[in-house]
Image 1 (cartoon, rainbow, N blue to C red):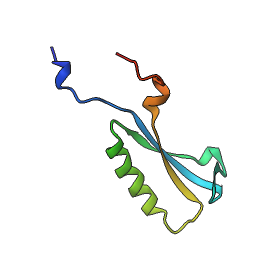
Image 2: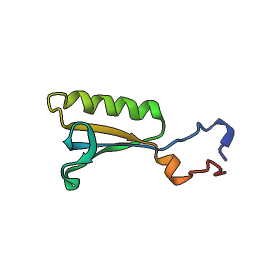
Image 3: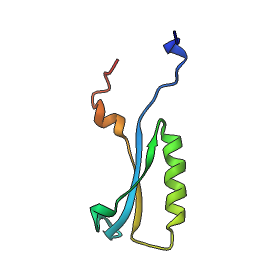
Image 4: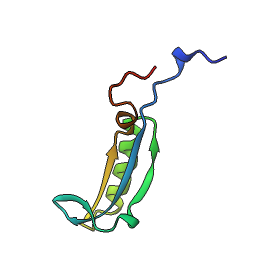
Length: 81
C-alpha cells in the first residue's frame, strides 16, 4: 500500500496551440488544426512544454500556445478529496 502523504499533488495542465485569426485575439483560425502538445502534472512541466513549442514557432506571429489549468475545470471549487 502506498502512503498517500508521500505522493506529490497532481494538478492537471494541458498545453494546446495553433494559428490564430489575429495575433491579438485568442480565436483559432481552424479548430481542426489545434495541436494538443500534452498533459502535465504540474505547472512547471507544462511551462517547459509550452516554451519549447512557442520557441519552435517563433517565426509565425499568428501561432500561439496556451497552458490550460484543467484541474480547475475538473474541480472548480478545489474541494476534491
